Amino acid sequence: MKFDWDRRHCSRRGHITYAPDERHLRERLHATTSVGEVWRCLRCGDFALGEPHGSGPADQAPEVPRGRALRDLFILRFLAAERLVRGVFIVLAAWAVWKFSNSQDSVRKLFEDQLSVFGPVAKHFHYDLDHSPVVDTIRKTFDYKHSTLVIVAVALLVYALIEIVEAFGLWWGKRWAEYLTVVATAAFLPLEVYELTEKISWVKIATLTLNVLAVLWIALSKRLFGLRGGVEAFEAERRGASLLEVEVAAGEEPVRPIPVTAPVRTDSV
Image 1: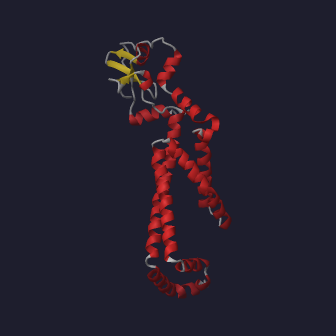
Image 2 (image 1 turned 90 degrees about the horizontal axis):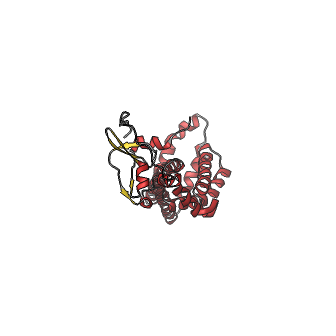
């Protein structure tokens, strides 16, 4: 069964109606019933009871995402949520690095004290903590300079801000955010590939796959960087999805009024 994105969105957010000044379009989008006048929704095409939400010239009607555009917006908002969560975690990581840079000696002492406590337990299970790769990696971080850790914290914070800006831009479907997402995500792909050469994990593979698919999907579906006709083809496609323009292309024959004996259903309003 084909999923109806338009009716699903209208059922959750409500219909959007508009009364154009052009008489032939107004007649096509309007009807009178026994329970009052109804206007055709610009998104799903169903008639909704009540006054229109707006009026004016047809070329000034609100651009309502519908069909494929509405589905694309759902995908963009999924990517936005993923980037917002990632940005928050990176902010926390930057804060942790900054705190560590200001208390390296105390953290080193705490680590070594705890290590000595767990030493006998590790020996009981025949595990050498003194030559453990994890312990060696942690000890190396204690030798980093304070200035180096501050630079790392600032870099992480900048990266987090980029992710958060992407998240808000994608949520509202801004075209500049789509460009930023493609450029920023593609720039970090080589680093993600390099990390896989060091150590393979399912999390790294899933992250890399998601980012590659996101870059390809946004660049192609949104026609960025001149792909598939560029911005002109994208705008033409978006305008062509407008119900008012579909009505213009369909001709001027008015829609037959709904019979008085068959009142319109009000549960969809």
